[in-house]
Length: 475
Image 1 (tube, rainbow, N blue to C red):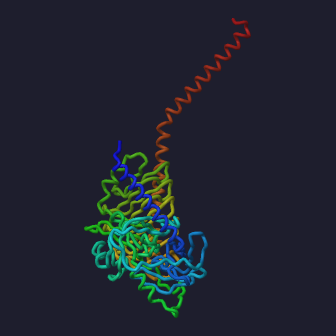
Image 2 (cartoon, helix red, strand yellow):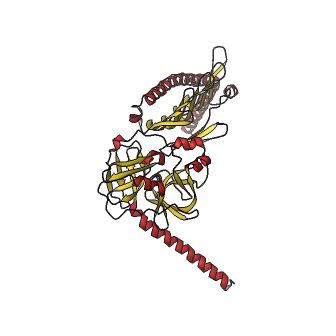
Image 3 (cartoon, rainbow, N blue to C red):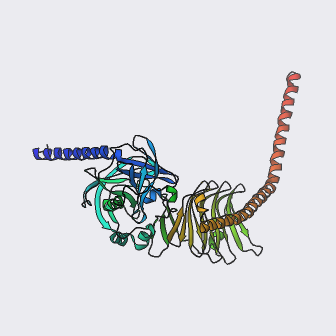
């Protein structure tokens, strides 16, 4: 039986847990009316009301490159944003003006930076799950130099953040769509805006601090003009990059929230792999006139299905692709004669879906597609992001992006010519296989037919004999 002391401690624990839950519930009730969902012509994010005259603050990358912006309140009401007053790309902050927002919803700002260990709550619209809340603690408060030291100079530089930015590191969970949403303390005061997360670890999330927010708000006066969103610069990448020590792999997080990860192309000879396909059921090995292996293609009934590979005369890889029912399905890679990568693409049921990477002397482009539609294009200088564009229309207005998209289409046209060859070879192979099988089975087929004919004749004769006997009275 429990002692009185043990029962008392257990009761206090229950009360503490209930108090904590009640505390967070009250914070949510207080803060949610100030939180908005921000929708643009290129995506969505979050924001928070900080002024009675329709002022909403958010991350700059939420509205970056946008031309149409609207906000939605928790109860579902939507309002058009008329423009922006201040943008601070190096601190990832933007102050926008929204027409018709109801009064009495502005969120109070905390006086200063939070203490490490302080309980916090993050609000926003992660992955479209509108008006979600998560909780955590403040793990650290860092300046730009400290943050750069932790994530690496290349990553911090690629994100475009200033050294004098102040970051509140927190364990409160955030995802794509949380950007621009408020991080608050248990007094329902704004501590910062949820901005980015480091995917290399767990619960490494960062909010641009209230100190930086106050500096933006201080720039607004009664004469500050509201500028139309079409005057915003074209979207720049706020990608986060992770490089391995040998630079063999890296991760690029696009502003869409998708993370592009791949190993630098394996340039080892495909000779053994190609040769290993000889004699494999469902695989066709295509050879040069001199007998050297050129390509191998898996198929089903004469239709490309599975892995297709080809190599140059010097046995360097040329192409590696997967198919399903005759259509590209999975990853496609091409190489030059030196074995260096040219193209990486992902496909689903014949349509470019996922990532495409284009190489020259180095990585030049990473694009995100869905059903052949360009969703985002990121110009690259090897491992450094340059300009980014939300959609094909925006990309085609940029000379370099337009040039690379044209090159991508030229490469695709060449690939399709090779596919015609592969398909022809596979179909001819399957027809030859069927002819050989038919020829091999012909004698057996004829013998089975003769046996069936003999059995039918015997059955007919037996039936006729039975009729004759009955007609003769059984004699």
